[in-house]
Image (cartoon, rainbow, N blue to C red; front, side, top):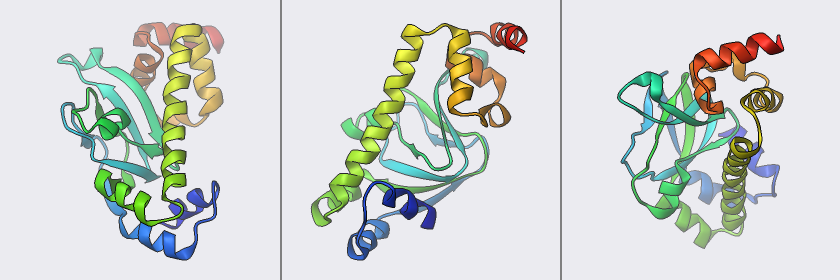
Length: 190
């Protein structure tokens, strides 16, 4: 939890009383590799800070080769099926731990309570929502404006350790190409 507080402190000072209220609502959750954090059709009830691990957001398909990877979140980032969280409606995608993953989570109702009872709550909530929105917006713009090769290169410029942590079939799906097309892209740029 110390890592989480340090991260929160990068955006705003949190007094001890507010931190005690906020942290009392956090729940530590641990997942093994390949565990499902949220299944398609479930309502997302929490926003989580990744203390350790990697998570993939994806649309499952009957044929696993056809799954659509929407994104990845890593240690030191927030994770949520945020649209489902905000609307409290079923999620159209799934969240999966790609490695052993430790999260600090707060539920929807507990977050509303933190907003009401602390000075820093709304700042934290705004910061989390801005971070999640910017990730989504950047992904959408990338899909609309860049070639698959540009998306691949930018992905590793932004997240250089990705190649070591994420299977290539997920990266291919994320940039919108087949694994074979990704192989050709990698061959061209090496």
